[in-house]
Image (cartoon, rainbow, N blue to C red):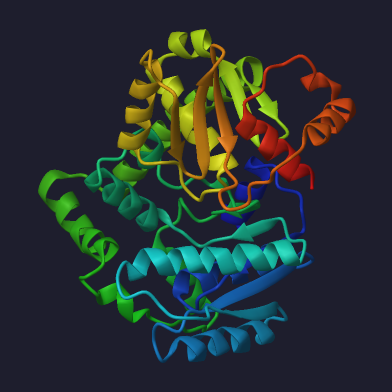
Length: 357
């Protein structure tokens, strides 16, 4: 399949062990079979999540297992256990699904997880984020290659129309499961999906146009990320991945957009969060830091301090603090001479010693 080959070549993916999230719907079934057909010698592993939100969810996973056996594809069913949320079901189910898939990949030394999002999913995501007032990073929607929970997420079908995927399955006489939630108007994604034909008919904004806009935004996003990467590398200090620090004077001179993304990225990383903090919270934090009387602020599992003309962002260990002795710190300094002579906040000392244990 040329679309699969082009994706792997363009993104320089050479690993031959690929996990695939397969729900039983047309998109994911097509993806896993296309991968197997394109690269028959690859170690393709299908992962299905039994979310338990519908009585049929296990039956759907077992159906996928049957299809995978026909094509000699390894298959595993992952079960979402425990109580299910009563509100925000769509988002919580998405988080739980990714957690299950990524954790299985980590436990089984699989670096790549392929997901079957297509061009309509991309267009829907763009409109959903537009409705929420997202900025550049949100409106850039889904990237072909991204990272989640330490696993590289691959989306080879973002340029494919869903009808192409159904035609592919029909050519192989493979039927698929229709997700009942796709017709539930309680979900914003379903509303957007139903709105797309009207949008094109009434004002001429097609799915292709929306996806083109996303690609343009992604180019701008990639440029900004490069600037942020360079600034973090050259103007901040990483303290053993438990803290970052940088000169307050440098912070003041950064463009507000750079401040916004550096703070967001560091808090997300140190706090081990799935998302960066909300935009309004970050903007408020930037304003506070600029004030002369700024002392500290807690956000996303981190504490942000201003001390000795530097800004410190430190991973918090709430409920896990240790009462260290001066001898403990002196021993740490002997083993890590780079910290000798530097006035370090008490919270960072705790973080460094805690991480060492």
